[in-house]
Figure 1 (cartoon, one colour):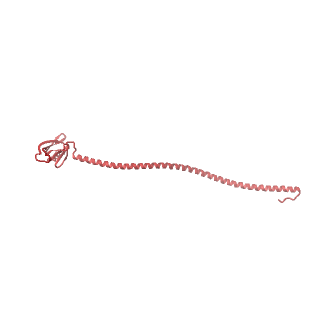
Figure 2: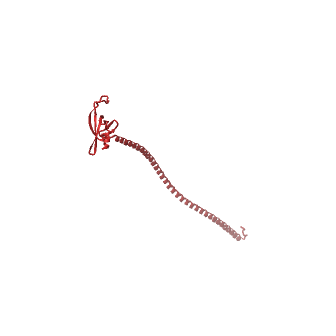
Figure 3: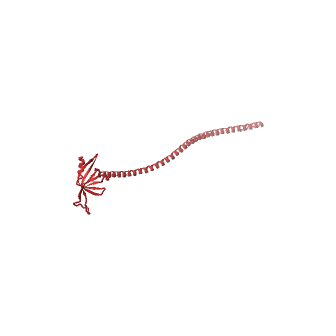
Length: 220
């Protein structure tokens, strides 16, 4: 109750201004605290503003009638040096407004931060897209290289096979050359034998003919 009384003392000797009505309700001259269940209220005793001039200036006699109003603590928007601002429960207290402003500032800051992060994300998405294209191109090149490698291996096998066949052909040629040498030698031997045989046969025939005729034997 002492805390509530302390809050109440801050409301005395101040103007009461209603934000919802847009006018000065009066000037607080006293205050009481009323408790109903778990809720307490401020009973403001105040002089009502009346007989205001067209100039809007304060003058004696403006506050004549006295009245009491009952307000909840959360009806109070702000308490200043000269006035109490009330919102009749429709306007949050200044602390709530400040808190909401702080929340709004934090929200706007988060929005800007998210926008920056979204820009970074979009940048990374673009980079990822470009990298994906490069990876796809590299995959195609890799497939081409694999095909070339397979063709190379097949060609290599054919070359190895052809090298084996070439080696066999060389060996066959060497064999044929050896056979040709042997054939030439045999041919030379045969020609020599044939020549000697023919010469011996001719000499023998001539000698027999000469002997038959009683002539000397030929010197051939």
